[in-house]
Image 1 (cartoon, helix red, strand yellow):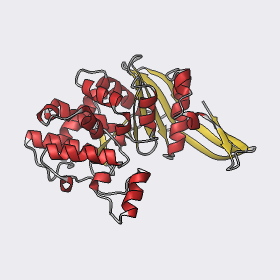
Image 2: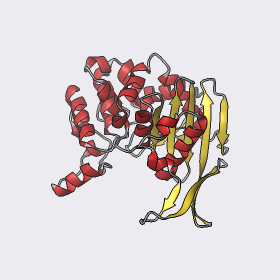
Image 3: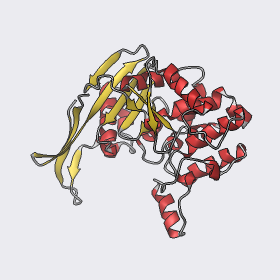
Image 4: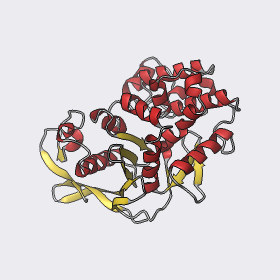
Length: 325
């Protein structure tokens, strides 16, 4: 792999920070339309960008109809959520509908990302639970498929569980993967799959533009904040474009954005996983592609990310963000 310099943070005449990574734009036919950096088709773990694929069995197993799920609930099953009160409310509804509880979730526990939720726990001397895990929606969705199909729920994240075998087949199908897929264990203990970056874009296009993926696309379009949370990159992109663009972020600097009208996908990978660099690079490239309109670029929610000036706390400009593409 040969990552390219994507962004520099300049203070005065000196570079204080530099971020390297990859950018690739691809169409459904796997034509690479533009590329920054050469990943040499090296497999990279999907991390949370896998969630739409992992949620598809909710639809194909007919668990969606069996449990009378809503688009909000489907969106949370695809989410890397911040643990806000709204996210937790929806997850509890999902678990209640399938006759399970948070004790059945095997995703592990971490503090909520949402500041209000975290402060609430601190002020009330409460501890976080599995519900606050940003993958608890995904795990709730996985459990719904297991309940619908009568599969074991105690070992559902295991590689050999029928659900995980089905998910691997889904990723292979939609991402057009013929070779053996490299796998490991994600932070939430579910399997994680490694595929080339351009294949991620191809997979998203094939999934969201398919009949099977229609409900997933609708869930993303109508519930941007549930996909991530307040101020999260993927939620911002979907919200600002009113669902014209679909986006999902993943850990370690990943972001996938698709333009369904043009049947093209953008994939960004920041090698050091810096979240602000991922945001600036993704939005800048969307601007260069013409996927964001002038009105959308002026949206108040994007203002801070489109301003490349480095300022002091007294509002004095002392440097700038420079893009290398």
